[in-house]
Image (cartoon, rainbow over all chains, first blue to last red; front, side):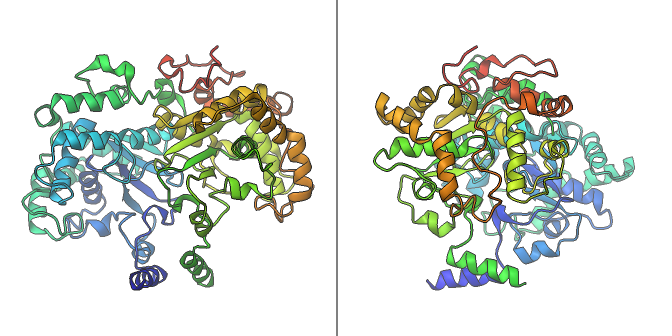
Length: 288
Length: 291
């Protein structure tokens, strides 16, 4: 009862996060992805591009590129417009301009598994097979399943000029080129030097150093310090980190979508029975 | 400031409209569609199917199948499980079971135009052709439902293939209500006798619903205080666009959503259709209606 009163008072005063239900403006830009898909890295890259005078770190990133679902109503109201914000939401029609980052779900699953260990949401003896079963069912977070989240954005916005799709793997392979695409999507005039500086300031090594220096930042607060937030930052780790049965489970769930996104399957023969057949013509040709 | 205090007070008392903040239960079933796609008709059909002892009217429909976007959080908390809830929301992965009704967008836009005049969103003088542009580009009175294409694609293609999803086409409901109603009965796990199906169809007929709207419309949450010279229950036909939409308007709609329309079996008249994805047969080809 008292707790309820406190919560209501907090809400009245604007001291709580509104989750999905915050106010969206037409001139907002969102950096959206399923969790553990390189969102924080992209946030650092863009922040370093926009604010060369103030290198991004885990202490200032929530101010430079705020996280829409974490900030309280009052904090959100103080963010100067036009806002660039981070989000993990599945399709939200109110988001007009969206940078969507997608990552191979086999790597995402491994990354989220370790992230949950860090957050003490699963014990060290919890098996990755068990985890992947829940991951496929969309039970590991509130942002739908990986396939639901990705498909909900692609089938609705893929061909909109206000939608930019980035693959984590492309960003890892050619960071500067992908960041230049982001800059032009955001309408920023940038020099190759500025892009190179942003890439340098957001490198995995640099981010690991920053994580160590700021262990109490929002993203890592109250979590195990022996499991890092910035992990291997590599593509394809699933090949050694994921048992075959788990790979098969993921590919059976989302095969066609993975193929469409250019992720080569280990068990292509399973695609025919996939749970999520998204028509390619739709991905390529629907727009608003 | 006053507005926000009023809203917070409503929130605290649970009097706020539930909408997307609705607390979903694992045994909920949702009846979802874009607006003006036959949702109210399907709602009546289902309610009449499940409550044969209580013919459905505009007076009791909010009790039998409440509207998540017209009723308060508190009201919906009070509805006993298992609930069947009506919604126009686009993709929401929290909905455990979904009946999705889709309708040809060329007909939806005509119906939505009349509805918007009924709701006084614009004057009668606002041309239909301008409204088509608004409809296609998402310049609507509310962004709550997304565009037709966003709403339909987000449900059918991000959710449709998993269990607990039933896709119905308005046009199939018109052409053979008993057959579609049988699918609904199966979805709810009830035995559908021909008598039960017939009674549900008769009690949900457009004529009967029009009669009820005349006497009950002034009190129903969705028609209260709206213009009463434009009916909520409109023509209730499929294909009205063929005589009422200009060629340019049809082109505009098909250019935006031709691929989604083709996947759903709506034939295009102004452009070549992309081939239908065979992998999707059974998901987007409703029921036995294989062409």
